Each structure stands twice: as C-alpha cells, then as structure tokens.
Amino acid sequence: MEGFRQGMQRLILHGGAGSIPSSRAPEVERGLRAALESGWSRMDHATDAVEAAIQSMEGSGIFDAGLGSVLNLKGRVEMDAALMTHELEVGAVAGLTRTAHPIAVARQVMEKTPHVLLAGPGADRFARALGFPPVRIRPPRRVAVYQDLRRRLEASVASRGKANDRDPMDPARPDWWPRLQSLVSEHPELLHGTVGAVALDAQGRLTAGTSTGGITLKMEGRVSDSCLPGCGTYADRTVGVSCTGTGEVIIRHTLARSVAETLRTSGLTLDQAVRRALRPLPRGTAGLIALDRKGHFGWGRNTENLAFAFRSDRSSSPVFRMA
Ligand code: GLY
Image (cartoon, rainbow, N blue to C red; front, top):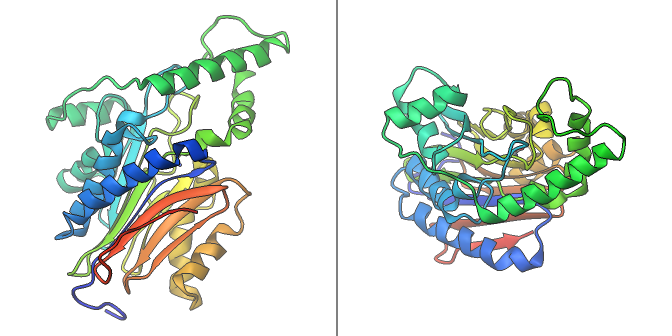
C-alpha cells in the first residue's frame, strides 16, 4: 500500500468545535488527555483504540456525548454514533435514549448485524438485547441550559402572539421550528461537544468514529451527521475522518467523504484537502480531524475553536490543542 509503513501507530481525537469558553478549557483538556490515554492503551487494533477513546469521552460527562449529552426539545436525550473502518465496514446508531456508550452499540451493529444503521426504539432494544444496561441520562448542567433556552423559545414565540402550552412537536405548531434554528445560531456554544477519534494501527488498519448527543433543543427524531457514513464519519483505504459542528450543514456537504475524495483525486496534502473540503461551508459551522494511511494528521475548522489531541509512536509526548 503506497506510503504505508508497517509498524506506524497514530491516534487523533476531538472534543467538539464551536465556541469554547476559556473557563471550560481545563476540563476539556482533562477529558481529551484521559481519552488519549485510554485509546493509546488499545492501539493493538485501530477499532479498539477508537472505541476506547470515544467511550472515555462519552463516560466523562464533559462532552456532548454519552453521559454528557444535551437535551432535545422535549427535554430528553437522543444520541447518535458511528464507527467505520478502511475496509468500509460500518456500524451506526441514531436516537439511542438510555445507553452510556453509543459508540459500543454502533460497533455491535457493525460486527453482529447485516445492517449499517439502527435508529430509535429498535436501536434501544438492540442495545438491551446485547446486555448494555439502561441508564437514565439527565446531566444537571444540560438540564439548566435546556430550561433557560426553552423559556427563551417560548418567550420569543409568545412575543409574536402565538404561544400556548401545547406540545411544541404538535404539527399544528410549526411556528416554533424555524425559531429553533436562529436560537441555536445565537448560541454558538451549543455546538460544542461532539466527540470523535481516528486511529491507524501497526498493521495499517484505519478506523474513524464519532459520537454525539446532538444539538440542544433539536426536534425529536432529528438525526445528526455523526452517525451518517460519509457525512460526520468516514474511513477508506486513504484516510479516516471525524467531523463536528452543525449536522445539517455537514450532511449537505457530505464533509467527511469530501475530504477523502479531495485527498484521493487532487494531489493535495491532507491539510490542504481538509481546508478545501471546509471552504464551501458557511462560517461557524464545522470542524474536523483526519488521519491518512501514510500517518499524517490533519485538522481544520471554520468555527472559533476546535479541541483536539493526538499521539504518534514517533513521539512519547501527546499533543493537545484548543485551536
Ligand atoms: N455534529 C453533531 C450534530 O450536529 O448533532
């Protein structure tokens, strides 16, 4: 395989893009540091490393994934995740409600079923059938943000003379829905927190994975880019990519696959390919990490921040960045 050197080991991970307040930087770095350690201890296999790194972030409560997931418009958690390998094996889940580690369920979809993506109640039942314990996920700080934004949503609709206490998901209340979009764009900090990882192991296996609780106040049933192959998560024989940011934009641009196509067809370096793939996206919408089969790391963002970390067998010290 061109450029691949047997024995190389690389791991890169992210803890989300958006606007990360400096007061949160220490805990984000702590979460990334622990995840890098967990992933690096499983580098015998790229998929194990990615799963371990993401499980660490899902379990930390720091990021918008797993136990730290944000709440949807109804005040409930719906989590998405995907894993993909360079052999185009892929497993994904959407709308999981009671599982601490969606990335582990996504892996089971990949390894145990003939399908790619399980969603909603079927995904929850699949998790239970495989023995993943049901967990009530309601992080207090996510609840506080939810209550504040929900009040503002109600007030802004009320100011236009249309509020009542009916179910906001009632199809008779579509006036709520466009307001959600503007509320989220007024609060870029809401974007932060999706997690992802890409690993290359000594046998040349490349795996990418992403996990998210999505966007605060999202509509019930909304599916993110993170669990959609080619959108928020992608791997092939050239490169692995994990994205973070506004799912709707990332999906429209099939961003992860776009990095891979650009790299494969343009002769650009990985960094240049990342920049080119991000160029058509509106400002403030996305960030990503990438790792190619030659062992090059890549990252990029059009948001204020991207929190990421990486480690290579060529250096004993990991690198942390809040770019
Ligand atoms: N990129 C994560 C989301 O849109 O939910």
